[in-house]
Length: 337
Image (tube, rainbow, N blue to C red; front, side, top):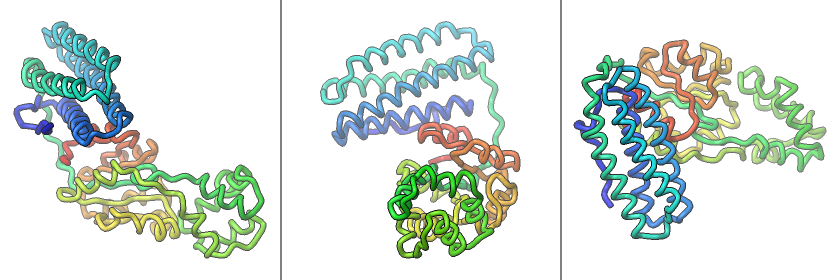
């Protein structure tokens, strides 16, 4: 089944609502793809659930705006939403991803509703919404690494060290991460790799060689495929930056080996700058390397305080939670991908 292609006539002209309509379209097209590829029932059901959840988010947002701007037919519009929600709940209850007929009927219904709703019902309230002022154009997207592009699990390091040291993972965690500055000193560039290895060796109670330590220390990353694909889609139109609190060994044996590494235009690493997020200097380094004003840059981090620190410096700081939420945030900034 063919995708629904976004067209200019679908625009409402109000940034938040247009962004959410595009996210809904992305989710619907994802569902179309999964059904067409005959993916397993669990995968199909998962994307259907995400679509259902986001529909509820969108309706709530849209109705709040219509109430704020005194749309006179708000009650009628709410009734349309309520009818669709009831139908969606019914589909969710009877949904069977293994039934081709039901899949086809569900997709036909969702596609028809989507097009009818945004081209007719939603266009009716357009005159009652204020027109958005044009925001400054975004020229660069800067990504954090850990838990944005790749998940990391320090427990894998601790388990490996426990096996060769005889100390418990919890005791190692407290000594390396909780009650000492060893890890932060390494990421901030205050000590080098050999000093860090010596510190870990002292904690483990035995001299560790680089050859035995490195496979344990660098085996902690797993890809977040949706973010890596997003970077590939953004690259033709935007400059891509990396900004990470990290250390030399994780960079050399983890970050540098990733398939999207060649796509970065600039790289800012805490141990090279000599400070850790949320210190302003690390963000200023990233912006300076891009040669752009802060307001032309987006910064994405999984930790809200780090994203907020970027915002205070004039960047558009976004907190990564889920792929769908990130897409919505980028759409609101009129980032095209």
